[in-house]
Length: 321
Ligand code: TXA
Ligand code: MG
Image 1 (spheres, protein in one colour):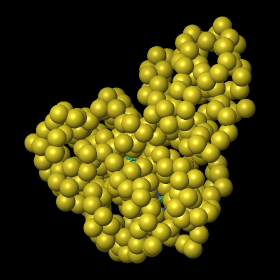
Image 2: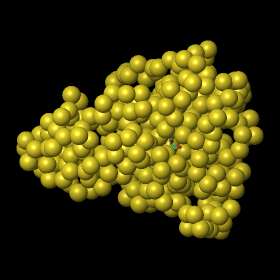
Image 3: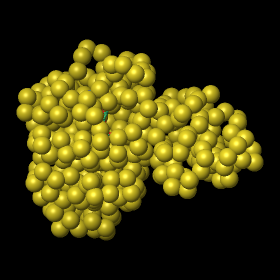
Image 4: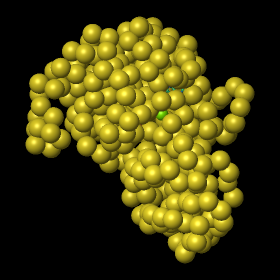
């Protein structure tokens, strides 16, 4: 283990954080996607503290993080062939697999569902923490409900304050948006949330997958799939061709065109989807703190590789074009 040199985190810090997890406390930790707010997944009272700290309704299931493939058996009652192949290929990595749950997984983790979302994160600090705690770790993103997900420890500090007991600061997250969530609970594999692993990458391995339709209100196809989510406090507008508001002072996430004069700040975004995703939340956190009237975001061209980024932008936007 070389966490000290790579991330500035000592074995002592890992042991301390693991002890806190075992003692029902909340530990924020880095993953390759976003920072997670972790609790012992097998302890319902510990997981209840996550919901309290986030201000998140209990109707949303939480993803369970594991460090070793053997841990799957502690949370999943079935491990379909497709799950085995996907895990072999994409774990550790930004892919969450929804499978039938073990009876021992508390209802509060799964929002009463018979299934559980499991993922093995590709971050050495996260893996070391889970290994040291010796329990699966339930962790949503470490932000208050409906706020922007954190991609640095500083975002966690600003957003959660003293609602979190300990933060492992492993530097900025490299993927920058949340994991892909794929359900393997029924016959047809179904994409519940686009993310770090593209639908195409999954389909290349296991064949065609279904998608759930977007829903604004009412019953969600999967609990927790609220349409509006991941938003900055500042009004975010998805625009086309530099068509930014004329009034107020705004910031513009530019992909292509020259903006109008009401733009106070232009942020040139990476032209590739992976680079864009890695920067997005960090840029939005920064602009949010600067107090603009609005943030206009140039809409990326539709395209398979942009699916996850577009999904997050649409959820964050107050209006789309
Ligand atoms: O990248 C990530 O996945 C981050 C980092 C911290 O790992 N975690 C994260 O967790 O985003 P969370 O709890 O916010 O993700 C919840 C998503 C929701 O879209 C929810 O519907 C889905 O995972 N999910 C979790 N368990 C599920 C289940 N049993 N059935 C259906 N969807 C589930
Ligand atoms: Mg979240």
